Length: 193
Image (cartoon, rainbow, N blue to C red):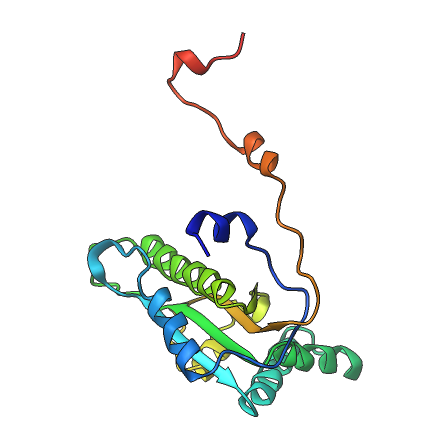
């Protein structure tokens, strides 16, 4: 797949099933992720791989976070939260472990981890896998971060759900959707009459 084709056809999966990327494919995805732009060569990204029974433990962690946030949450609501961890056979949590002593601003370290997540998603698509990028309240919860081996000051940039697409994904955006998001500053030749 050509890079331009991959970018223009990228879409999020609606539903994912087995098979997930095997060990070789996962290593390739993580290698691709690690090629992200990185100001200062800090390599702030961390990848936490969650699969098999560990997904159920993540589901409990998600439900516990929701219970803390909404003490009156119903059993049904908590069960739906648990099920989120089972929406794909493989989850890669992408985080930015920020280096406070570095001269690189924290936002740039977080953006580097976000670029790594995007690389991973594009590589998954190139290998024929589907991916969904999710966050939600759990991504910002210090208890969740700690349970995943991160520090409270670290940033989870996404829970990347990976597997085989069970159905067509969300259609890619039409090519014209970007035009209303662009402006030209200081370019007199682009001023509309």
